View (tube, rainbow, N blue to C red):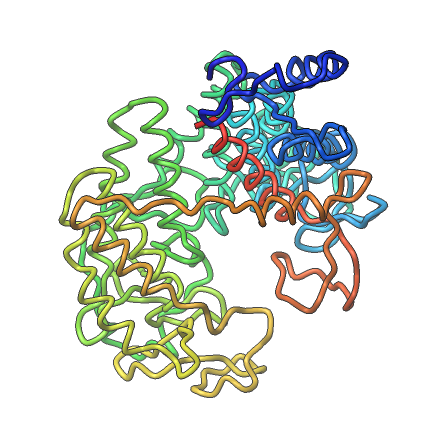
Length: 494
């Protein structure tokens, strides 16, 4: 951008009184590289910063507070009391524990990287680097990550068998709830932002990606967790069980089998795409295509052409936890459809789109009267399936346990649009933050640099036992607001 220009309009110095020049120069010299800070004169003759300048100041204030006051060992948990004396992830957490599972350390770190990309300010890259270094300390010898990283022996819980951290024995790398995927994807982007010069971060990424590829079955599926490379199994197509699935087929170690639970397909595909874009290694692209091939294999036959959370090695739907039965899943099937579209777009292979129309037609018939989608539909009968408070199967949701998402928001209309766009090769425009969004975020930041949330009974990740009206600081809110401000700032550079 040319000096004195912003958005194509010149800033004419002739109309600004000479005694303001020093203040103007100070503002511009302190501006972020590539972004000219504009000021305007009010009727009273005082200087007024533009919304971009306010966004920059808010961004710096919020991240400074989170990095300087909230971070522990460079990492983060989900929630904090306003005085920072209490911390929560899934349950209370000590200052020597950070969370890997989103919206923990990787989520905050990714927001910092976005702020750096938007502003060019090294402060944000340094903050991201410290979060990445914290994750490096928690990488397991099996190559991935667990839900948490302990920097001191906890009173309760297992210590991981870390490659670099304190000694422990837990060595199950987890894909549950995006744990390993979030850590790897953030570290990949951090590695790139640091020009591949941080040896420990780069080593953790390569070690982790190699372990992830070894955890992919021959049919392209992934387990929920692994300690070592997975065994070779026959490549089969999904089918209905030929036994009484209500009483048979339960195994303790369900995590060793093929899983789509909690959107594994989408998060793993995002990680593999980030890896291929960054390192240009064909094996990451091949793994992505294999994952897409598994999603094709995992589609159930008519009359229920959806997907299930979990499959055994014979490709029968199987039990996982006691409230996760073999069934068609409305929630994870949406992730599968979105992932197939993503893979088709990235690889250019239309075969990943071919089964989508049949699935969309089926799921639109499955919608509940309120427009939501049930988490489960019974095999063959297609009735919405729930558990009661004794964890017995039922078609009545009135006594369903409150800790689980038995009904979910349906995204099929948007998936239909995304499918049509992918089929035609067109690009859907990304929604940009509005000025109203930016002004609201700026206004809600308190004088200390905190966004304070008030609990109103909503379902929160980690299900903390907050009372109505309880105030807290949320890593998810921090990450979301930082990303919105960064998107807005970046949009003003174009």
